[in-house]
Length: 288
Image 1 (cartoon, rainbow, N blue to C red):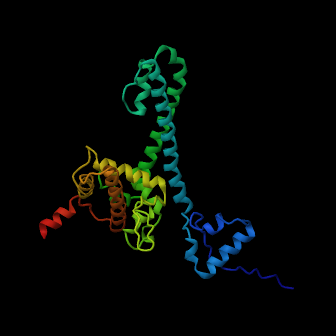
Image 2: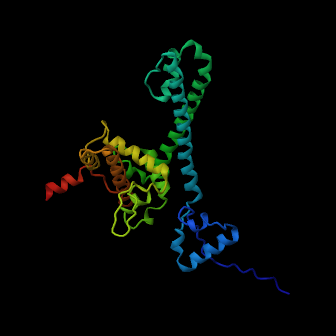
């Protein structure tokens, strides 16, 4: 008798987006059998109804976790610093304004004697965390300079450093996944949500879909561009024009608008690797 021949069925694997497929999450008769039946019916009709997710490679995911681990340490350090400032206020003491890393040197002299022994372990933790954050920063700079050299095109924009450029590239994973650069803004949840029905258009806030970590970094870059240290460019002029209209949340809308245009511009620079022209619109107007 001959050896049995192993037959491998070549099937396409589709990973559904659980946030979009609410037929499963909100089913009152939810179990594995019903979930599998619902997914099979959706795939038989149109697989796009499951909003399939594209997985990153293991290397890309590992590099992205490096950035997220740094973000966790920054959040913990910020929480400790805020606790130190709040704990000294009832004693009539305000700690000096400084960066979290400089808190270790400037805070001990200002902390009341009653809190010296209590707050010293927290200061030691801040020092240790700051050291680890600095190590992460060096690793991120090394990754951006050597393994992701295309990020140099994204870092041409003032306010976009190695952290934001690397997070952008690792989150998207593949620049060619978007046919149009304008689609990136909606993919990251930086465009207004829609609820139009029966001729009624409801003005809603941004959808906030997609990766919240990258969206927060883009908003931070937009705040720098619109801030006192931001250089004159089309992004800054666009945001300042929106803020000048006034209104209850003019500055916030301006920041979100700049973050959305920044997401589109970063994708375009990633694909073309072209030199960044800060005042492209001004040059076009002069040429016209």
